[in-house]
Length: 118
Image (tube, rainbow, N blue to C red):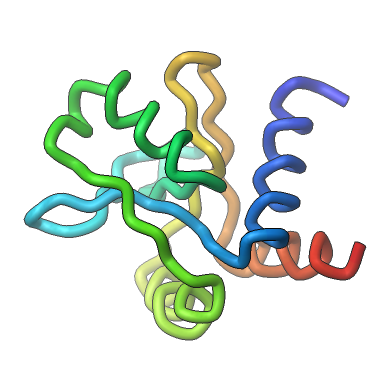
């Protein structure tokens, strides 16, 4: 398993365990930059520490704050809007390790739900 595959698997496992997904937000809202697949992606992390690390290491995220989102709120409120808007979900983006994995919102949901089953 590659480093990226391990990182993504850890993301799904950690979100499944905590039932919390983390993003970042500023006064304007949640960011959705162009991701690794050339489409807009909202970044998400499996912990507050990972989100804070990205804020500290990415100049364009200066002024953002980590935001905890309960898994049920994410799946019921955010995920449908992301799908409607054609956004991808960035999984544990890391500028330090150059990891940038983007998946569809439904792939994210299915993978976390599968991790819950395990």
